[in-house]
Length: 126
Image 1 (cartoon, helix red, strand yellow):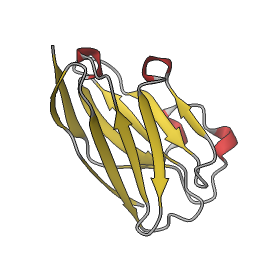
Image 2 (cartoon, one colour; image 1 turned 45 degrees about the vertical axis):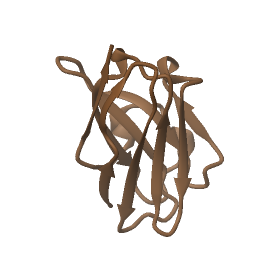
Image 3 (cartoon, rainbow, N blue to C red; image 1 turned 135 degrees about the horizontal axis):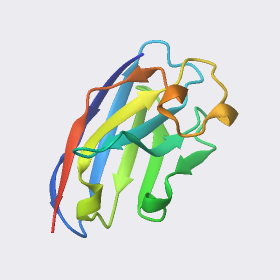
Image 4 (tube, rainbow, N blue to C red; image 1 turned 60 degrees about the horizontal axis):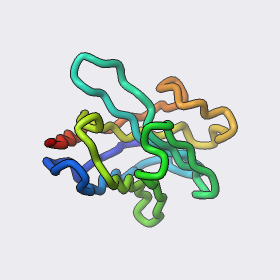
């Protein structure tokens, strides 16, 4: 699966931003998600969505502020980020599981995902 992310940028605290990631290739029954990595920190899980868009997961720090959605034709995952704060500043990466992988095995570990897009930088100014 090839992933192409877009939508990063500079936003003031309290603002909103939407990230998009288009997936191409073998995307049948593929869950997708977003991770982020701040300078000097490890990559952390942000959100994920099942292939049917029935189930979602979020890390606690973004619950109530971020939403994730899945679209088809082309297959795309979007991360709507609201009420941004400087702690959300990071490079955001979209990721996808392998075709047919079970959603119920997703824990938020990077090991749950087999394909990664290039990062897109989100900077939130105070």
